[in-house]
Image 1 (cartoon, one colour):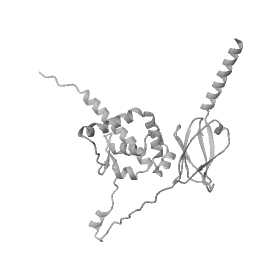
Image 2 (tube, one colour):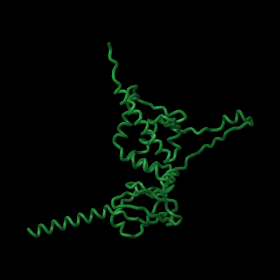
Image 3 (cartoon, one colour):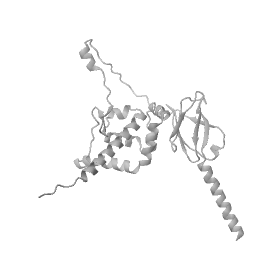
Image 4 (cartoon, helix red, strand yellow):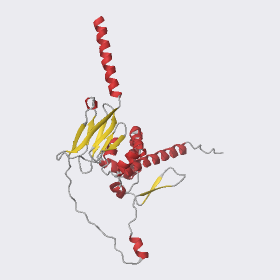
Length: 269
């Protein structure tokens, strides 16, 4: 009996020690290098997906980031294949990591550059200047935001699908992913992360948090009445702000619908 009690106490002690290690926050240190040449990669992005905290590597490729065991780290660099790293207790024992990234092959597409033709008459030339085609405006007193320009037209299989599909999609998305949206809000508020995301255009962070692929993300923004031009050209920071604006619009519309449903019916004499 005493042996059984002793064994149980030993197991409980080991479990408690393991749990304490998993909750301990440690400053993870390392260097990001080119997988083939081994040269340091400066300005690489390292993001702790669990803590929603990030950093950028120094000129010599080094970084420091607060982590816990079982956190997931996303490492990315322009033109290189990104990797996700699961933090284990062994990685947190004080040794500096060396993380190698490899260049990803990219197809070189033909680009047609069109110039703006000017004729020297100010009144005519000023009309030829390209406008910002995805300017989003906010009107004081209204919770919704609006994009200046034409949104992408949707092609639904039937009038009934056109009526219900976007609404159902947004209700399903935002209703099931409040934690993910809170993480996007945290990304938007931190200055360091804002700077990082303003220069990113790969959508990896958003796809990771929203658990969507690139096509689903494009469809979401399209259902939120953002134009095809915006979806293709916006930075990751602008995309995050767009999704959060869409969420605020969704809440405002939902609140208005509930309030309209609660309007008492007129009593007929």
